[in-house]
Length: 258
Length: 266
Ligand SMILES: Nc1ncnc2c1ncn2[C@@H]1O[C@H](COP(=O)(O)OP(=O)(O)OP(=O)(O)O)[C@@H](O)[C@H]1O
Ligand SMILES: [Mg+2]
Image 1 (cartoon, rainbow over the protein chains, first blue to last red):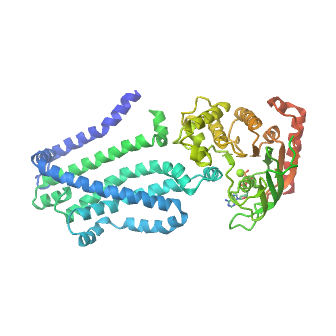
Image 2 (cartoon, rainbow over the protein chains, first blue to last red; image 1 turned 45 degrees about the horizontal axis):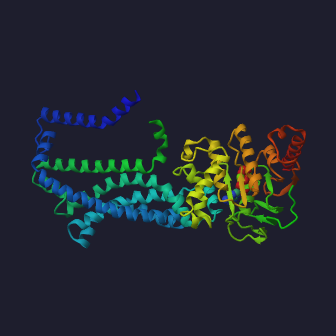
Image 3 (cartoon, helix red, strand yellow; image 1 turned 135 degrees about the vertical axis):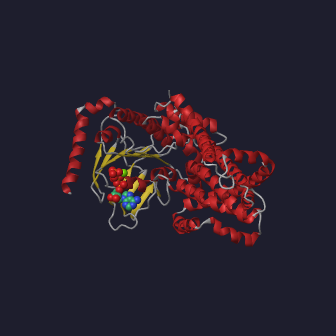
């Protein structure tokens, strides 16, 4: 009973996608919508196959640009998170600034980055980085800042240094928060890359969609959307799996239930 | 059983403490000496400064006025010879029970430097300790797979594994049911009888204080002062049976009256 239920749960997203595709196709047929406006799934699939080579090239470019931005984001995010989370003073001085920075739309940075670095990969990497590091900072800092006073007393009465407390308790405790933030950050990094590619690049999926759109090849635009969605979802799932592997103790409720 | 004749292990001389940003003192004029290996219990109404007393005794808080000596030397920094356990077990959920118990050995010198080399010996020590509190075979389980009482046992093992000279317990049995509590009294009694560290036990439970301690201190309502000191001269080793004897209940009653007087005075 429980097993078949969980099987159903894991198939549910696929089923729903299939239903959505079928409805979409039927709507396109029924109302005879032109593929310049709103291409049907079949047309999108056809252009996916037809342009498989170029799409793969652009997708690969977008993928590694995103990963580079994400890697910088993780490094900077962890570093800032540890700094912000381990000192009350820094927390209260730096945190409002980070919040302010985070609420600026990152697309506003692209023109600046283009002036500084020219059109191409660098602005895309940096945009991906700028958009994805904030959730990592917040999560790591939160994980570090929530140390029970009793546990702190136990450790300090053992003569533990701040570094001891950080490595033995702070960092392990913030790991679940960290992995949870990676899932969010990787999807944001794709957003950053594509935003930058659409306005300031000569390759990548963002550029592909932009140029396909300007020559009215809508099925190809949708194919680009589809490819980004698939890449982001795959990376999200990868990090979700990693999270469950690394921090099983934090999900003990679910672990006990299955 | 113990006499505070020779150099006391812990010596408080008119210690006052006000927490930062507060005018009122949390504890006032604490003067007491604890002999090496003595088992001291501290009882008193909630908020009277019992936990504060423990923070003073370990150097986690410096007194606003007065002096504290530990082992004949002025206490200026946090002690590194203390083991602590609290009402909440505060075990680390990502470590197994064994690794939780080993944690102090990864921090306290000289074990810290020897930890990698001597790991096998330390693991044996931790396992032996776990076995004495009835947790043999639970080494590789995670804390969240243990019951509250089992977690508390592991927490006491963690406080003792580095063989501290002083054990500080802040209501360690407060959250446990009566049966488990009495069982853990005996566990603590046996560990203390075998190793003879100095114990400061904070508790609400007068029976617990009388059963375990050599000396019971009664503290007053905030600001905390020491109202009474009672030596418990019941013979050792004490068995749980003793808690039904008249000598035992007399002492509990006497302490209860003291606490009652605390209430009336307010
Ligand atoms: N960190 C702190 N900052 C300011 N005041 C504090 C702090 N900790 C305790 N106090 C105050 O000091 C007094 C004594 O507190 P303490 O925690 O020592 O009481 P306690 O006897 O342990 O109480 P309980 O039995 O409820 O645990 C209380 O009035 C409390 O408000
Ligand atoms: Mg307390």
